[in-house]
Image (tube, rainbow, N blue to C red; front, side):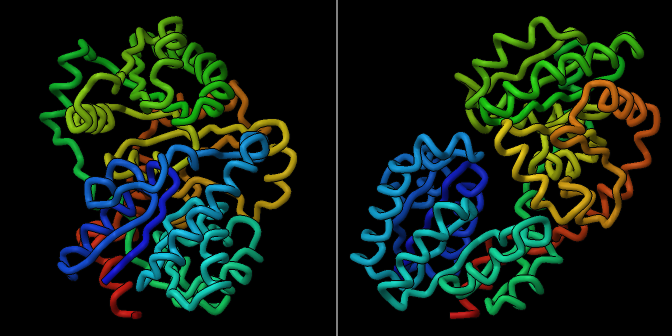
Length: 382
């Protein structure tokens, strides 16, 4: 069995790696080609080019690199058609991946699977109908997504979210983390994003929020688990923050060691102030209450809010069917309200606990690993 797999960013690389592992478990005689990062390379892919070239977000960021991205798209389409695999699997990164699938379908009958349903329930619902023209099967991470995909004419299976199969630190590991850093009182995680643009837009505001929170709660300590792409940037910013900040820097640290350290920090924290994204589910898995803040560049801020169809973008709120996690997006991403929300969260963290547990349950905690479940779904539909 020959499978071409494409991922365009780290989260997709993790999904692709787990899916590839599941497929190899079920179909030992399998060959992979495609584009991916370290997780997919560990499962046998020799990436056609560095996946990082595709890790671009936002209208203003994409436009200067559009010509190069289009060349890469055409290169990948040719590679798929030349190899003629049994199946093409595209993982997230829809702006790139779905264009590849469209090119492949226009010239062949190769079966196409897209892993991660587009959030048509949130914005641009017409994407599902357009996607159905060149995608046969969708693997959904969220339990409420299959009806949207099926209504557009695609097969769709909810396969669980990968966060439910990731390890969570023990109470002993959390206590050891606190002891290592001399934290005996309240501890707040601060997660300003994994992309430079995100950090540049959020860092100053998050710093001001922390200052207000620390003024109201003396002794609170701040811990910032840095994503590798922005570790250097944060290293130059956070020393001036309130809360005697601890920066967890992944550079020069074994990946598994850093991951364990980050998990311990998540479990040890009393709460978090975080950029919007899947980090909210990582916090939910650790049982850590949170406040979400996010802003866009000027152009995206003018466009995206007009397209939104939901009143929250935080996955914990959406999956649990509640609105217990405060989120401040775009124009609402203001220092005063965010600081008040963080203080309120620290005063009454139990208000979020039930929603965090329900979210993990609905995402498949305790069931079959999502990568294996996704592999079984693919094979069952072929």
